[in-house]
Image (cartoon, rainbow, N blue to C red; front, side, top):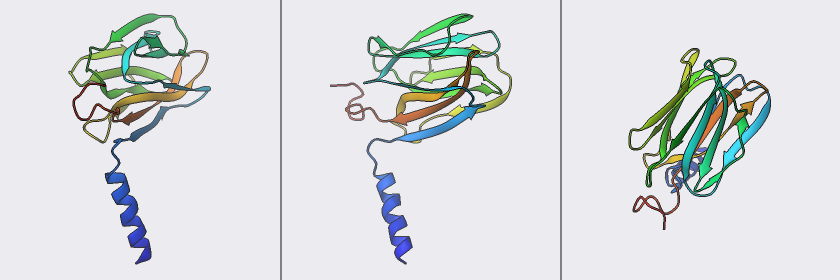
Length: 165
């Protein structure tokens, strides 16, 4: 009985979590150096580099500040700038040894795709309908991105009016 009570309290705490935090576990082979791309506020742009076969590197911008690069540059570079009030709601793609392709989708239905669609499919999205991509993590080696994980939450002051104060 006591175990049931503890479980119920924990479950209620998770449901009541106003941050809407959720985590999509890493996909890919996961070899190499770890990275975390995290900043303050909302993600405002994404840069992707691909070899034509897999993702070489990625970078995100928070506000006007670009974070460090995860992976490497080279190959085909794409930049995707988000509009005011726009945020990332889905990260999908394919993986094998490397992240073969990435598809990033926003709440406005806009998207960017890079790489080649071969390998095992993955689809990452938040569990809370108001949550957005807050940061990325994973691993890379000398050739490219070997794994990716996504971390989702409701940005403070966004749940009420959709804009930051």
